[in-house]
Length: 117
Length: 143
Image 1 (cartoon, each protein chain N blue to C red):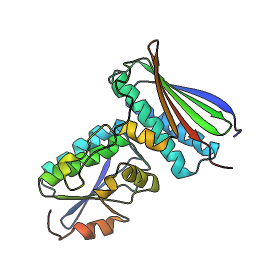
Image 2 (tube, rainbow over the protein chains, first blue to last red):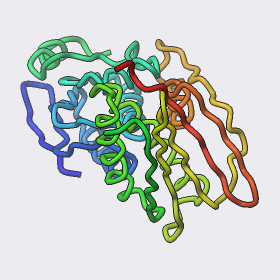
Image 3 (cartoon, chains in turn blue, green):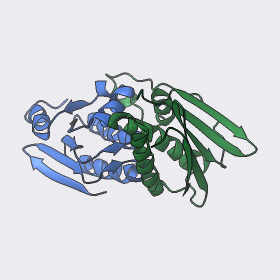
Image 4 (cartoon, rainbow over the protein chains, first blue to last red):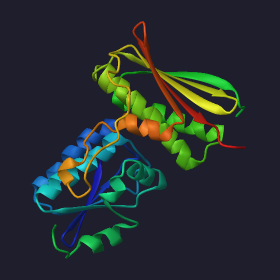
């Protein structure tokens, strides 16, 4: 899966360059996310601005990344989430778990410099 | 689009094929009169059902058929998703159970059927003579 990567201060911003984060793409996406965590990145923002469809496989790939990061005391936020993606987070109650921000800048600002959980 | 009609889409049991089907379903839902957020959710329900057929009924093996029949009738849209693989052992949805303060309790799978039930008005599962069919029905929006 094609991903954009951008380091902003101590935050790594990951931007999937695909319109669909679905079961066909989720496995590779998960491996890539775990790779960033393995490399030592402790603060990640996933910018979902180019993703217009996500299924439960895509969602649980992000959950896996959050759990892995949480074990290491890191933080993860998501940004630029469309209405239908927000509905997916809400229906599964995972909107109560993820830090969701309107923009990448807002998400980075919230994570940057803050204490690691 | 008229308020009556039917269409059958058929795909080989490979996950990369599901995106094409999902896009077609989403487009048809828009033509049927659903707004964009609702059309996206209906696409999600059908995609989850087809993913389940590929990953569970056919256990990820390509070379098998999954059929999606769409029936637009007066007042509702129905999707019939059929396969000839393993029948679902438990077609009842399980609400995800986790503690939002405990990351280790978060689900890493098993959300598909729950989402289908959240989105659709009626869900029925049958397994007859080797053919498994999940029927998903949604009322049409008021015109």
